[in-house]
Length: 122
Image 1 (cartoon, rainbow, N blue to C red):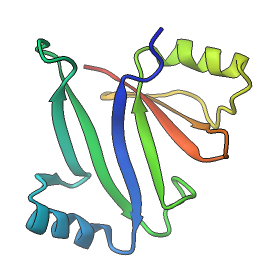
Image 2 (spheres, rainbow, N blue to C red; image 1 turned 90 degrees about the vertical axis):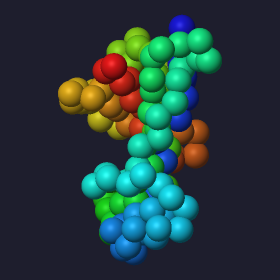
Image 3 (cartoon, rainbow, N blue to C red; image 1 turned 90 degrees about the horizontal axis):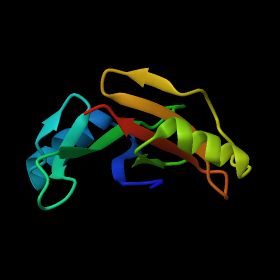
Image 4 (tube, rainbow, N blue to C red; image 1 turned 30 degrees about the horizontal axis):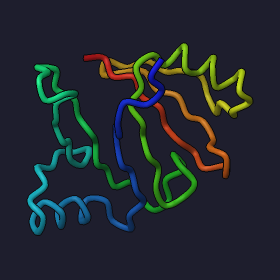
């Protein structure tokens, strides 16, 4: 079983997320939306299956993650991976949540950093 298939998102804390989003749009040409920016790509060169990576600034005082950043990893089978990680002694922070765009769970890495796992619903 593949555990991680790519980077699902880069999230970072910002003093002014709206201004940060506007700066990146103006100066670096990011095609922004209310959530930041979404980068589309293909799973494999020969694949018609499009995937995405999300880029999002969060408010500096956000409690969604503790450090100044959080990485979201794309995975193929979140339920099976969570069971494997539990058996390996990895801390699972919360229950799997399902939204129209995918399933999510948070874990702690070996240094206690919060990591988000995402199984997209394509």
